[in-house]
Image (cartoon, rainbow, N blue to C red; front, top):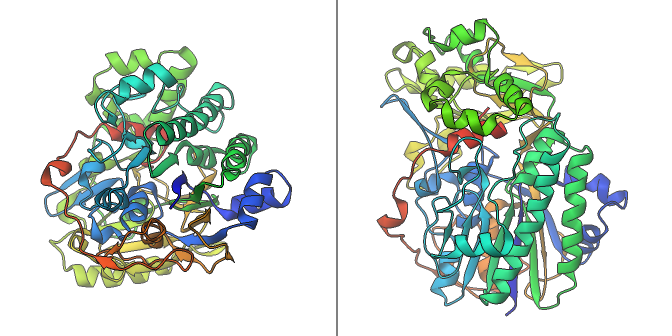
Length: 511
């Protein structure tokens, strides 16, 4: 059995890549796809980082582990909190590889901060591993003990780029910093695999999708993909390595910005109250303007340190207030529904939720623009999610049309606009490529699910598949049996702080 390297390409889409492949821009990716098994994939709803990286690693839909977006909404308690890695209640494919005696390593994986102990190194990444607003984390992001210091000494390792990209007008050092991080992820992953004799390594290129969000198919994104293509060329030459490329979801050019909470208010599903944000909005002061000015003055770090957090939080984003502050601007006792971005909608249990849900689904299915319905479908949450945590799921789930960005800002005033910060939005369909000694070379497969990846990787390593995984083994790996699931200790699921909120705001991930 060979070693396996899984390269997680956040937001990768054949829709973006096919023209570049056809034009000869990505020759190594083209050659790899030609000599492998590959497919278009379908993510779980909503098609975002949280929850889909965990859908991949656990083989479960979000009802199997209890996280449905970057935030957890509990309208019964009147609370909205930011989720992190300790909120996911599930074992993952590396736990099963460990249980089979195989050593694993994970580099830069979203949804894993704070890190937990496995048989092998974990280096947390994505938007959730943060120390403070605008500042890169310097400690506590990796296990086992001593790994943070080793990464700093040997690689000058950074979890986040510096300076941080926060606008599609920034094309200089912010882009260079991300390209340097892409190289760094590969270097660390391959060094750990070799030096610690790891059987399986996963590495995620999270900031790739940040480039795609801000630039779509423009030059900065192509530069990143050419850098990745060079690494694919080096790795594809190894006949002792299984190489897997995959993404948590896809992407497509943004055409429409739809402000779901503003629509809910306009259509009688949500009531509003007055908050301090209204004052800032009337004078045109928003978070994007403040950050842009601070960057021009070179004062980002200084302001982040000296301005109290409670003051920073009072400045709304251009689209309105977000997260827990949404509830400060909403008159919850008279509100029937509150939405997160990109799909989930939660209903107030003080109303007849069955009646509200039926009416809301019908109304949302009728929402259109000049290109037609904004949503490919609108679902009852019970029809989308299953598992032990399905009772925490949103009651209504939007499947946004490709190119539509559902924004959850409260108080911005608009219901629909042209694209704002993002030139590309997430879509359901991502990529999968599997090549190497332990995979059959079957060419293009029918569309697969992100849930099928963990069972298939386990089968390629000769491991039985746990019975609580929703996915199935693809016909490119060996035949294996089933096994009882692993239950993680409670110590692995202690809640950490909510520092990820600021990083998500900076990147536009919680718009």
